[in-house]
Image 1: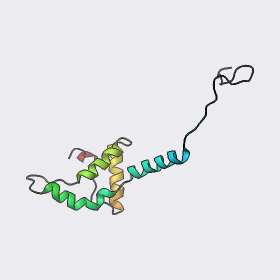
Image 2: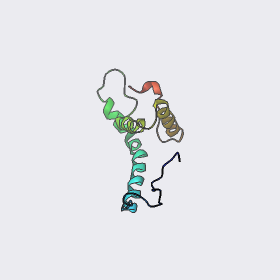
Image 3: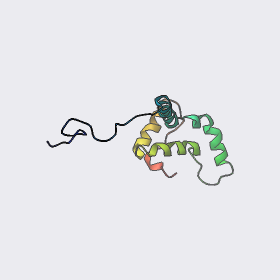
Image 4: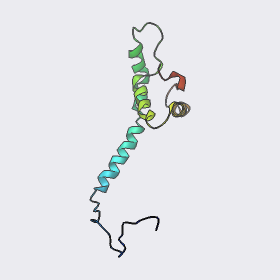
Length: 109
């Protein structure tokens, strides 16, 4: 046979049987918390006050996005590319959750 199974020719399993002793309720809750982490939109509550502090006494061009938003996008950058981040930001803007959205050319600004 091309594929070998975990059974010997006589039909008995070799090795010890795997015993799954995970605490499934705890594991499920960890997965839920991970989802909450990805969608934590708390940065939007302080958007303008954080920008005001960042731009206070700043000379030259002003910051357009608060640092907390940039950090949130950094988490998502591990999963999607820059244009994907633009799509996420654009949708948040369309839903009225953030006042403006960056495009992929503003990644370092």
